[in-house]
Length: 601
Image 1 (cartoon, rainbow, N blue to C red):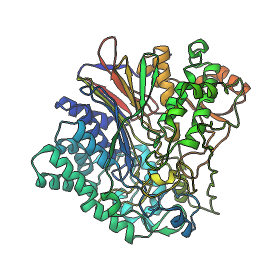
Image 2 (image 1 turned 180 degrees about the horizontal axis):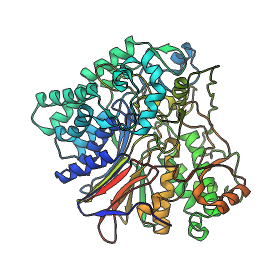
Image 3 (image 1 turned 60 degrees about the vertical axis):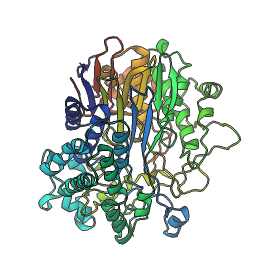
Image 4 (image 1 turned 90 degrees about the vertical axis):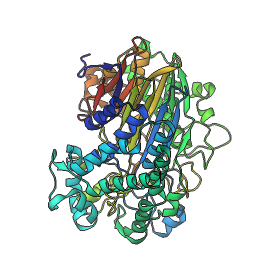
């Protein structure tokens, strides 16, 4: 295959992210003596400014880390829970039968800031001022507006002007829709970062104490006060077509702390893969990998009809289990050990046949009866404006005036440093069409609550204080116990299909990370998407045209209902790691993310 981008290698550091400026920010931190965790945080804060259509300070993030000194992988959960007032009965009283996709009702506790502070406190070395400096600079001095962000602002401009007026003040300078490449500023967000720094410095000269003071200012101080006041007093037009106040309060923010957790893990040959727990979709990667470990993928050949068919069928089985079993384990038992057990995996593997399954079902583990709630897609009204279609879609970005679920959703940053540390984060939520910008803060709230079900008794049912299951799913891989690769991708429900394909190409076929990110990609669309309106397409396999006509025809003969998309459409994998043979650090970014770039020194 022809590789479009070179395999980047270096000795001092490697950074890969969904935006070239964030990659440069991360490398700048490494050049100043910071470690991978400092670099990831600085890049993450920069992404909040320069990719506002995909994430923001009011959103969430999942961070996976491998600190070489400790020799273990850990996950920082920046997925905030639902408010205490968020009950199924409360939504029923409002006449809401499915979680709204946008507005204030599905807002969760903003987890991103707390998670980045926890990362810096537990594993970082640099002062908060140094880490926040690039983000403040871009927010105050300006950054080039990405085409995707410009398209989103253009699609939402009528709503911003008439309803979400603080969003208009932020993203419609001079009441005009900015063009792609325009210099965009966010003075209010810069002011929020700067005030957090001032309060941190006023509290102490000690680095760790400053991080805690900044966290407190966000979750117990002026940021929490502004969120509380806005949610309680502002009726916001949302994706239901009505106007509602929010349920999130300052008490909800004050009660939350980001957790540092043990990951789920699975060995695969010489490799061990680490994923977030079942409050995310992360273990679905491991379930697919466990099923495929008993298949002769090398004998099939990379990218062949049998290879793609087997991956698609394994995905259907694993995602059926995700839909039935995954949820917040702090609130409901999740039988993760059983779902990854060899005996159970063998039973699931035996269900893969020569034909595409059109009705895959979750498996039985223990006494529980698995079930998948039925989606209730909202029906668009007559002559519905485009901005309402965008609100109902629940996903961040738009393309040519229509919701687009491909490579553009969410952000990613992965870092490897010269000391053997790995970090990878997938930030999301709080994007500019999720809810209105909060005046004086400069950012909207995240709406991850849209992924919960308004039904009783399911692991992902709405409940006060429960984390709605997130799609955010970073990965860390060790090889023979040594740091090897940290990677992730935007893409909602498809994240753990596209990244799995990249990993298999590296681990099973020996491809360099860059070459692996450029391979043709596929994904199933069989199950209802996590985001409203939860559309599903049973039996559909989305496939890039670059697979070739013979492979596509062979997949159709096996019964797959193909949705063929242009080449370089699916996924935007970013990876950083260590070459075990040379010790060089490596960075890779898929060509689907035109603004995604890696940097190595």
